[in-house]
Image (cartoon, rainbow, N blue to C red; front, side, top):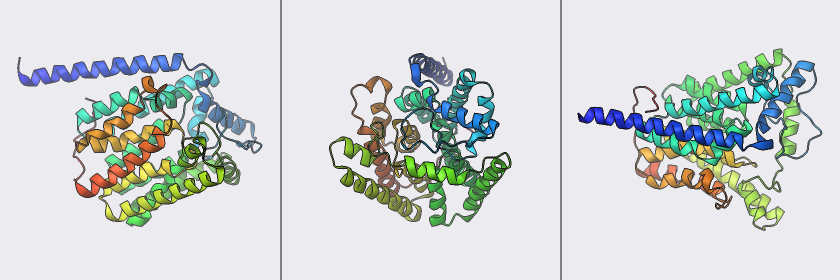
Length: 365
């Protein structure tokens, strides 16, 4: 048999294996979800229902995060969730989950790395707890993953980079850090595209009654004080859970945020564009006072970059977050993974700079 045909058959067999593993993990994850199935979608559904009844989409009586059904996203995001909410909660959450899975698949297909690396990332991703849990509860992580991947792939097209960052900011506030990266790099065309996307989304949302930005600011201010929430895995929250006093833990969180912002600015000035972009992507999640474990899904982007440059140690990051290892892995691996990838990007980017890999078109195999 010719070598080319053998490689084709092997690639097909690997693709089939990945599909089988992904389907099995996802099905088991959904079937065992119990009360957590669609937990975050419940928040979107409630906000959409409030919009339809003409009542405020934010519940200002809530003062603590970490529970199901709390809407704490920018007002325009309701527009994306509205069509799913119109189906009713039970059908809508399944349709929403059916939307999130392709977001992850397409995002992985867009990664500007070799197809073998995309296959590895896909396999590591579908068996990881961040992916399974994000899809299970209906969280927006796969959407941000897709937008970040889109921006990375088209880094040479400022309009797409900016639009992706702007849309990400309308989905969840943290991607707004990318606008700061654009300012430091003087990527004015990308910044204009980001501002235009945000303005357009906010304008359309305002026309249908989604202009409650002051309420959103109130919710963010109240719920960002999550240091003592057990599920929060930010640097400060992790320190608090390990026995550090609340005041010192708060200072550690502020110091961590300041360090991350400084590293993003430094990478914007000194590192290659792709490195700086990915540092900003990682920093956008790490700078927040809230870091849930499923936020680690976006770490697959810098992991792909590192693996493309033969930094095989990076595979430890998604492997350590595999669902099967969840009972034995300490939660501290999550903030450590964010920092490990952030430092890895900077060190490898400076020591072994390389131009982005040219890929003719995205493909999963």
